[in-house]
Every structure is written in C-alpha cells, then in structure tokens.
Image 1 (tube, rainbow, N blue to C red):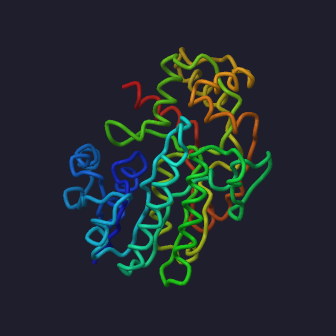
Image 2: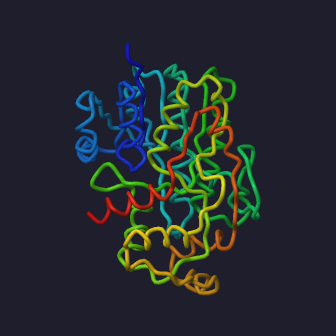
Length: 328
C-alpha cells in the first residue's frame, strides 16, 4: 500500500520538484492550492510522470482554517512548503511574517489533529545565520531576529521556531530542511520567479554589475530528494538539516561559470558595496541584499550528507542547466 503525502505549496518552484520526486518514489501525492485554477501549470509539469493523473489537488490556504482536515485525510506525512519568498524587501515586514508564522502553526496543528506521523518543514538557512558574522555554522544556529536581518529571514526564523514550539508535547515528529539559495531548472512554465528572475537578468545583460555576495547554494532537485529522504529516515526525526554548499559560493563565481558557458551578456564588473547601499535607499531589491554584503558564511552540513545520504549535484551543472532552461 503506497504511503500518502500532503504537499503544501505544490504549485511552487520547489513544490513541483518535490511532487515529482514523490511520484518517482511511488508515493501517493495530495497537493494544496490556494485556488484549483492554479493547479493547471503543475498538472502539466508532472504529466509525464507515472501516477501524475492520480495526484489529488485540494483547495486550502495557509491563512484560513478551511480545507486542511480534508487535505490531510488519509495522509501519512506532510511536507510543508507554502510560504512567501521575495528578494525585494516589503514596505511592511508583516506582509511576509504573518502568513509564514500563522500558516506554519495552522498546518502543524492540523497535522497533529489528523494523526500525521511526521511533518517535513521547508525552512531556510536564513533562519540559521542571518545577522551573524562570517564563520562556520551548524544546525544548532539560529538567526538573531532582533537585528536588522530583513523580512524574509525574520519570517523564516519565526515560522520555524513556531513549528518546533507547536509540535512540543505531541507524538508527531518534525524535521526541518534548511536550504541555501535554491537554483536549477524549473519543471513548470514558471517557477517561483525569484532565483529564475536573477539568472534571467544575469544572462540577459540586465544586471550591470555583480554584488559582493556569497551564499550557500543548492540544486532544487537535491532539495526535492532531501525532503523525500526526510520522510522516513528514522534518525532524521527532530533534526534540522542544512541543505547548502559547505562553503559560500560567490555571485561572481556563478557569473563567471555562465560567462564561460557562452552567455556573453553576463557582466564581469563587481558592484561596489557603497553603490548597493545607496541604491537601497530607493530600491527594495537592493535593500534586501544589504545585510549579506561582504559576509562569508560556511555551513557544517555533515549530518545532511550522512543521515539523509545527500550527494550534492555539482553547482556548475545547476547553473548551466538552469540558464539553458531559461534561455530556451
């Protein structure tokens, strides 16, 4: 009897890859969508996979209680992906924080009530190292929300903390997957837009210079495999897994890799930090970059490699395959 998994946010960039990996590994899939019309792109993206026609789509919004009991009915596991992600800093941070925190609590509570065995939560390295100085950090690290770390990092930190708090005292298991900057080709006609827009701007010559930013990066297909591995690996219960390169990857290296692959419009010039800080006064995307300028953070990801048996995709493959998919 195939085990059934509910995927919240199935229509997103990562959500589609997670659903595809679940189907490959013979799980039954239920996906939540804010409106059933939004499922069409995902149906098309998954259509070539065995069992895709049996994927059930249920209307449920993380901002509302309705639909969650129905969505989780008969499910063994939940993968909770649905959360807002924008590079640009919103005018009001609560636009991002409230749905992330309230939505996570709502899904965890519904899962406990439905008797779900384990929830795999998609968190982020943004909940671990934002506001931290350069150095090496492991799964026990948390971002300091009292610093100016930006709305996205704050939303991910508070949402993950809320998840661990909510699950306390219940018999349900929780696992957090904390990805770095996720790249790689999308399955559908459109991913979540953020990393895709950045690569599209790079190869299209719309980014005049490269900011001094280096991040832990990861292939979206690895993220999908890690989520599925986290469902039934006994030793994973109660752990946070860093899903990012152990060393920070400079944006300049990403740009150089794409330039060497024949994308001639990719810039070589480096953007001075003062120029980005100046832009941040009137550009919300630049404002979102400021906390990361010049910071070099490494990650202790050995538990992810060992417990979840992660074999990271070389990032050069990730970059070039993503660029190829976008430029088609």
